Length: 335
Image (cartoon, rainbow, N blue to C red; front, side, top):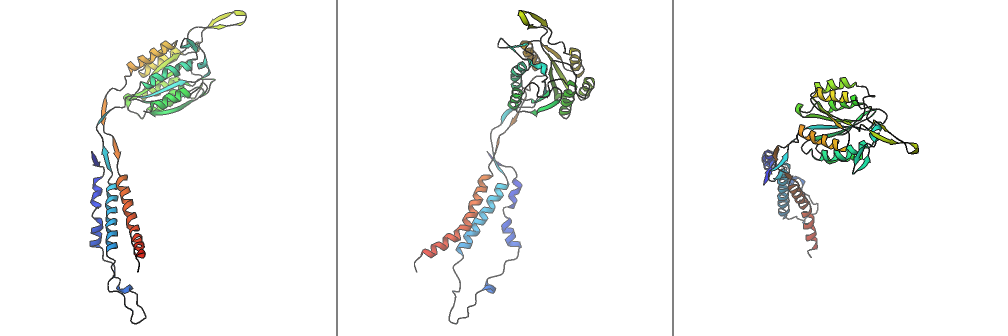
């Protein structure tokens, strides 16, 4: 159905008639008449000029009426549609330090770096968060907000896929700065919706904000933090002459700090030793922080103001072109 957004503007429709009634009339043309010095030459008593002015006046009034209608914003309002309400304000904080390139994960039965596993499995997780505002934060030696909180999940997924190791510095890991930046971005959001998912394979060894202070800030601002420790416990490395040795690629992982961070902020710590554990952690997170399932009704609105606006422009053009056309028509009449 058609509705008018600002119907009060329609009171301006009779304004030209009010102005004609209130304002004084312009002087007649007698004082400006042409006096010919030659005797015996007389002008017609009344020229037949009433038709064109009245027609132009009609086009002017029509243009005014259409302009007022356009200003009132006519709209076409469609049928009500169900759309998901906003659920969580969720920030994903991903470690991009050099150790995230260790190939102790599996993708398609082939060894894959830790960061690639986060990209592959995280893409499906992001797509499932319909109704949530999702943002993306990268941290290494520094912490950067790559994508602010948004409903545009495709953009978040695209930026995650295009990110690379070392984007925020590859030599060290500033976990405290990442948490502090996340709290800064989430603290103005509704209290029950502030969620941070932090994924790392190391310990805090860079940055200005101490992790303990970052935990306090998160707890004070009611930011729930879910932490994921990434990396296998054992990795076989081939050496020279056919030898090999087994190492622990996750020796630097500070599980105590990650567990404390999750516990003190009302979240939970997950340990992802392989891709299956990582996928299971994402599914568990979906259960702990359910996706918004309530809906609200919205009616799509299409603006129609350009129709009367176009009509007004046509009416103005006709008002100016009509005298020209009439003059040319008179000139073409043989004398």
